[in-house]
Length: 423
Image (cartoon, rainbow, N blue to C red):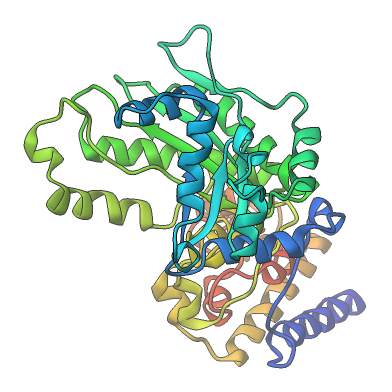
């Protein structure tokens, strides 16, 4: 009826005005239930930014007792608790350490050790403005049915341990999952899936109880003649699955740190493949810096993101402290292509497109006109119109697909536009 068509047209104009009014288009925030109920998130975001600020690094002093013994053995020192304490005191009291180190990861033993003067190591570091973290995983476990692949243990009772470490002065934590590269199919889907889920669960528990999680999916350097290109491919594959699991667990990317491993060829690779300047920069860098979506795009979940206009939509989304492009993985599922984002379309054109779309939707609701412009059910419906009706907007403006001009006008994908254009 005329009334129905008029209502649809009016709603179209109202939505278009809301979308394109300069005073209203800007930052749009969507928060997951996990994030909205978590009082620690603002503090965690600030902590992650402080750890990853430019010019500073993290000192990993979380060697286990056997590993610390190997370090001491190289200088002829016996592996005793006192020698380990003295060695770490030497590191933590070094002059000017706070000018270069933003955080220190401690082993459980070190969390409760003291300097020769009786001051706790945690207090010594905190007094110098250095944040304290701890390792939460309990080591590697073999995965049955695989070729020596491992998973990381330590989820049992993790929440209680996180609360205890936070009370003792820790502000962040680390969890390491190890993947190995072998023949085709290694790392296996099973190993990737189990470790990705463990990393995501650990990160969620840490944020729930007030620690910033460092997520470390490490592709270990080992024997084999695989190329650096293969190593880059497997790294990208692992990171994709890890970020999908992070997304599904509703972990807040701005309140975590991602620690990827170096991309290197196998130990048995030819010398030409191992030359760092020509190969690592040429192959590894561009591959891992390109946008990488999660293994399966998660669009319907609630998530937070900021709408960017113009060329800013093509810049890598920066995580806490600007260290890694976490925003692309966990928040938006990929940005618009540079050419589409840079192109600008007049507002009048976009409003006209919305009106045409609304009128067509009203006619389809009444059974008057089909998606391709033909009479609904008529014998003259073209094959192209029928295909468009089945598949949506493959090559056109079909049901459920925002018009490409609308995406350009917004400077990239916009959730309100996508939701509105489903009518």
